[in-house]
Image (tube, rainbow, N blue to C red; front, side, top):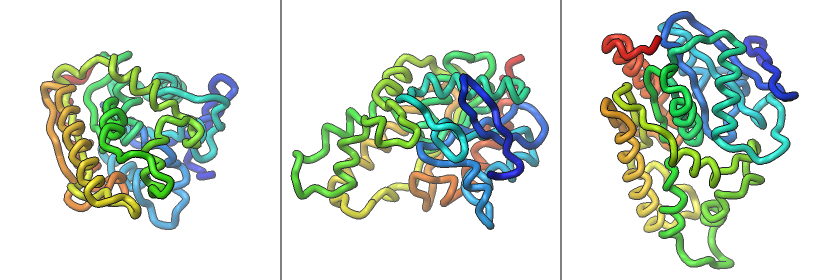
Length: 273
């Protein structure tokens, strides 16, 4: 365990979190599936979200946590949805006395979680950054272009088919139900939003046929652009040399996107009270 992290008890479970810096709006990070924030702080050289935190804390307050099933947080006893993860996040922020307004930053499935948080508590949110965020239509769209099942298909194709199984995730995430929840979420209206996407052609894992990879990339790109419709004040940034984990490959790009939303929220007076 890292000495700068604290524990929060909720419903018989423990969640681990870190909060640093001073200022408002506070930045709240919700990471992708399977990524332990605390573990990243234990590395000899800070990387990923640990590196992002060290930059943002110079400007404002910032909080991150390990959801149930990650790092030293308690393991979930049953499949969980994004709505439950968003509720955990709000309870943690209240416990740690991290007052709104918030700039929410969601990576991958974390994008679902922050969108639901913002939908339920719109007056607590000043803006949002979506970092290669999941989209509720992605799995439906992917399934339409996957080739017919084959005993000789690669492991990556099998994983694409088995995305909906909560047992495949350490967090036991119910992706199907989470996608349904996000379909009903509210827009951000005119609050600042930055959609940050991985660079073109960056996702070419071994075993994935080139033609299929290209088609999947096309779908992903279309869905990333669709996220811009969540706000009337949105902008799209595409990484130059980053894969899905932009916080690892181009952390400064993530930092710059967060600072941009912070500036817009402050200057435009969109910070809710």
